[in-house]
Length: 335
Image (tube, rainbow, N blue to C red; front, side):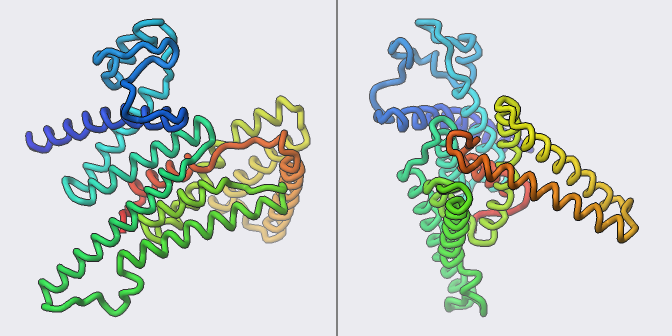
């Protein structure tokens, strides 16, 4: 990496830290209903206006020992976490895309995702202004890319050529299909909660988040992102769910679910390594696993019917995490 690229990388990292600091303001002031511009930054405890050296991303938190410079009350760990995550996302996106139009749209989109995850985690609230902005950015990006593709085709061939399967490859069509796929899948999944627990499984905001992600990444990627989201949600929910079962002394559910997970992992290992070769043993193990799983599901669904006993974690953050995982690890790019 030459000196110019190093300077650009440092600039992107510093920009990410500063944007992360701004995203903290957006998250907190959106929740409080305040303007994100005025008044200037202040301590939420004592109300004193912060000095410029109190607002240096991450560094100020460390130097102040995680406490307000005036009243010495603890500063939320949210501030450095959001700043660091934003910086990391900016750097990784720059390394993936370089200086380009794609980079601008991706960073804007990802910043909105961080804000959405922040409000959802903090207060389990998703705001229309954020999710609708995701959809608008995705559609706008797809229109620009479509126009650029058409112009490039005209420059090369003297006419606009979109290929034989243009309905499948045209970016703007892919974006619209991504919106429909994301919204339809999430809305269907949300409504499955009615026959099971008497209410929606996911909030309406989650439907718009999925639609926004689909708008930028297209229908193929949104399918992968939603699948990964389920896995992320399970990993995030299980510890809290097990803790609730233990505290409530719901031993039947706790034991059956634990047994099912142990049997499922054991079954997968034995199948993957080829230890199960006898057909009768294979079928017997599958039946035992199925019975254990069905019993665990029965116990979980019974608990879900009582709203006061539900263990709820918002699904929005899982979709945000899954988007980053799929984008950076699975080579999916915006349309």
